[in-house]
Length: 261
Image 1 (cartoon, rainbow, N blue to C red):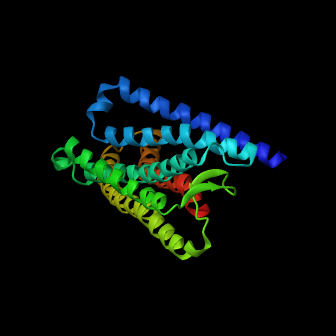
Image 2 (cartoon, rainbow, N blue to C red):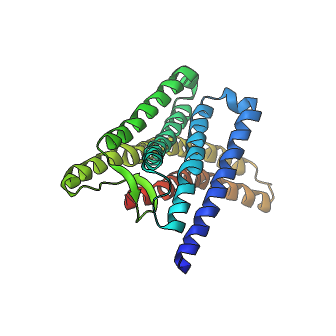
Image 3 (tube, one colour):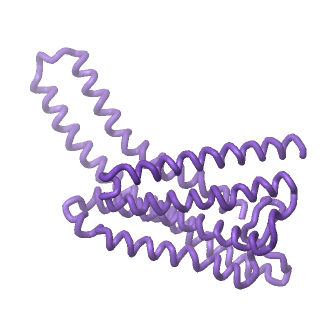
């Protein structure tokens, strides 16, 4: 193994351990917190966590073996199964994050009718759709033998070995990523921009009350006034930072997969 392959193998091991630890902690929080289990978004978080855990224990070890041995780990049946799971779990994770953003949009924009619009039954229907949506693409790929070991990625993934199927495979790949990554990203941007709009509206209302209070309290100490104005500034930035972090994390996690494939 070259030095770069050793570094790559080390990075995969670190990512595998971090992913395993982080998702197990999320699962433990869900199991031991009755409050989280009562909340509808908990179903989306649980689904996302299971997808990440299955990806960690099924795909990443075989990718590590592919980097080390530079060949397909296991037989064709195992590789096809892992490639099927990789496509399914990745799509399901993207759609789960989109479902979480829809839940937050309803909770913030329609707070009074949230409990009637987003019940456990509604969340279960959304999850059913994400599963059907996610499983349709790997089924098509598997039926057309477009799943296999790719030496460039050192993993079992979407892969076309037949030159005569190149055009069909390119069309399939474009449709797949448009209806998974791009669709989820559009949903995230739309819903969180609506949430940001509401958050800024409430910030303006709070700012008006704060300024009126500061005007009335003429004998207030300058340091207190300064702290109030500083908190006012942080309040405006808080929602923007949180939303930017969530969308940025989505892009950071899934864009490399989409770009390389």
